[in-house]
Amino acid sequence: MGKKVVIIGGGIIGLCSAYFLQKEGHEVTVLDKSDISEGASFVNAGYITPSHIIPLASPGKIAQGIKWMFNSSSPFYMKPRIDVDFFKWAWYFHKSSTIKKVDKAIPLIKDINLLSRDLFEGIKSSGDLGDFQLERKGLLMLYKTETSYSHEIAVANKAKSLGLEVSELNKAEIENIEPNIKIDAEGAIHYECDGHMTPTEFMPKMLKYLKDAGVHIKTNEEVIDIGMENGLIQNVTTYKDNYAADEVVLAAGSWSGQLSKKLNIALPIQAGKGYRINVERNTGISMPAILMEANMAVTPMKGFTRFAGTMEFSGINTLVRKERVQAIANGARSFYPELEITKTEIAASKTGMRPVTPDGLPYIGRSSKFKNLTFATGHAMMGWSLGPATGKLVSEIISDKKSSMSLVGFAPDRKF
Image (cartoon, helix red, strand yellow):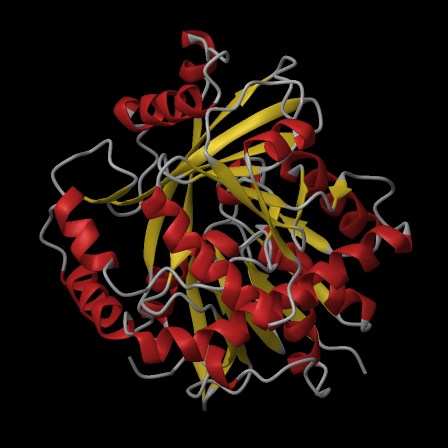
């Protein structure tokens, strides 16, 4: 018999959870504080990335962040501020940034990404959402220096050892694969295993499908209270209504930490702000790429090319820092010297906040405190890539089915 499931959060994770839960026959309600038209699920690079096997928490990352702390245009920026939650998170991040913990995380990241890639293909082949961009051209890691090459070839060799499709490209081969725009790079690692999409196309189509399928989508409803009794969540209250629940899924992205406090749960999570610029004219770019020295992503989407990047830890806010957006434009120009991003395109930039855990692995699984609470958050820069896999795993948890993969490494109450 189906359960009444309330999902807090209408981003890619929340909607994919709703998709698989309604397939299992549950009565699903999605609550979101916005109108579900902006934020991280709309401004991301649209990558499906089995290649991204190294978690954000890796050796040297904190030192790099401290080095860049006072440069607000740096790719990895931590705004100096007095914030107890941030200090705790940063300490856990530091403790997680070891070779041993990274090696333990790598197969988990690979497996959940491959699961998600297959599920994206399944959603498309089902015809539920109609047609949408889902391409498997791979991802180019473009580099200019020997230092960047040395770093990435080590990752590439590890990826190869795990069975992922990877190759190296020289200058001539880059020109052959991307002939319609000049690229200033010494070479590239081509992760053929990766794919890409257009988030602003997929999200509205998923919303329409869910509404037509009977899922209750409640927008502009911020959660203000959560009723609890005897180790169970009884109901979720917004400014507009009260929703009884057999099961609750917390998929609120960067707001998950704040909501967890209402449940007296300390969930270490921080908002990592990213930015994007859309160029809605022909750029000649046909291959997704990460520009290594610029620390940014480039994606040919449906109708435009997206330039995205930076990781900014400055709390939850929607402030657009002009110097960070300009850094993206400058980075693009350094690799595509004939491409000029205009002032108008820069001015139309958007931002979104990615929920980042201390060890770079998401929180997916049952709460140890409430029997009917499932966490689905903390995906950092892989939120888009891991949407379907997380949704599938959530549906299996709530439907009391064997999960598609082990959830031990994603346990919400794990120690750091």
